Length: 156
Image 1 (cartoon, rainbow, N blue to C red):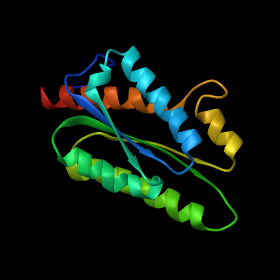
Image 2 (spheres, rainbow, N blue to C red):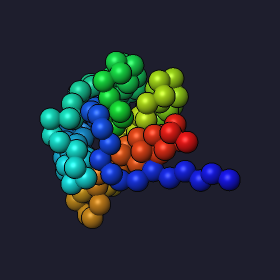
Image 3 (tube, rainbow, N blue to C red):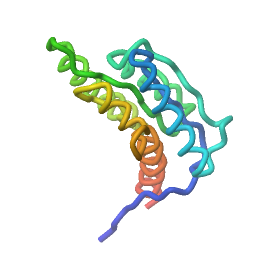
Image 4 (cartoon, rainbow, N blue to C red):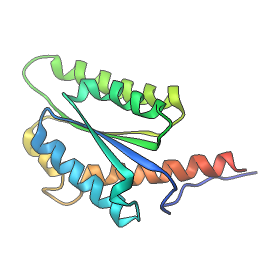
């Protein structure tokens, strides 16, 4: 019986980050945490490209386009959808999640969901590093681990 695990060794190749410009204060904090985590794990700054999408709804198309280029070992999606007074939140959050998942499944490239879905701006800022932890950093670690996990499976 085989058992496969990813690790946090720096993989060969480039990483792409797609950040949503809407709720930029939060997205910029997530991006900072993501870049920091990649650097702390040995990914050179020159091996990271960033694409800015208008908002979280547009992130999946950008992610899929980046993934299909063959230039990236993983694509990390960062953004923030904050609940408002209309059902718009449910539409955007649900479709962003589904689209990110579909981009990974369609391309075979790890496409990581680092889009916050919160009730308030305060919750979003807390998850973007204001109060311990940064979900952008968590997304970076998930990307490294997934690249290594898929490599372990492929080489068995």
